[in-house]
Image 1: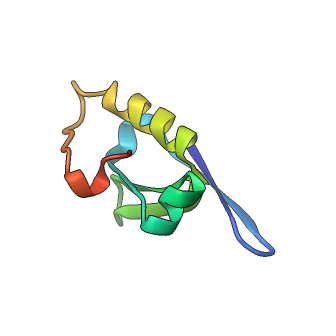
Image 2 (image 1 turned 90 degrees about the vertical axis):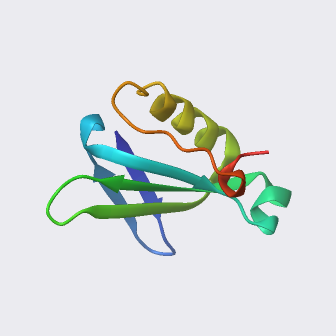
Length: 87
C-alpha cells in the first residue's frame, strides 16, 4: 500500500506493507462533501505507531481504499461510525 501526499511545493510518498495497516478512517467535512472530496487516515503498526492523513482526495479513491481495507475483515476490526460514513 502506498499513500502519496502533495503539498504546495513538495510531494511525499509513504509506502507500507498491507499487513501493517491496523486502522483506516474516512472523513468528510461540509466543504469536502460539496466538492466530492474526502480525507483518509491510516494507522500503521510499528515503533513508533505511524498515523498518516491524506486530505482532499477524490471520494471515489476513498471508497476504493475503504473497500480494499474492508476486504481484509478477517485480519482487521472494522467499526462503522455515522460520522465517518461516506455519503
